[in-house]
Image (spheres, rainbow, N blue to C red):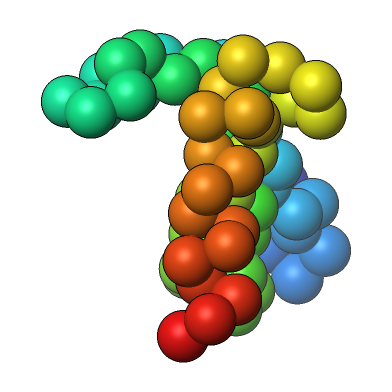
Length: 71
């Protein structure tokens, strides 16, 4: 049983990261940081996308924060 697999008793948590370009019809292309995290003992994966603080993508996403806060 190789270390790092879900069936190994001491499996290291899966964590990968990278950058992703996401085209959006209204605001154009967003450049986001993407992390893949293991959840639930590595049988589930969670994708987390964030925009770097002060980046163009962060400023394009800012209006969504206001919309979400009013919901």
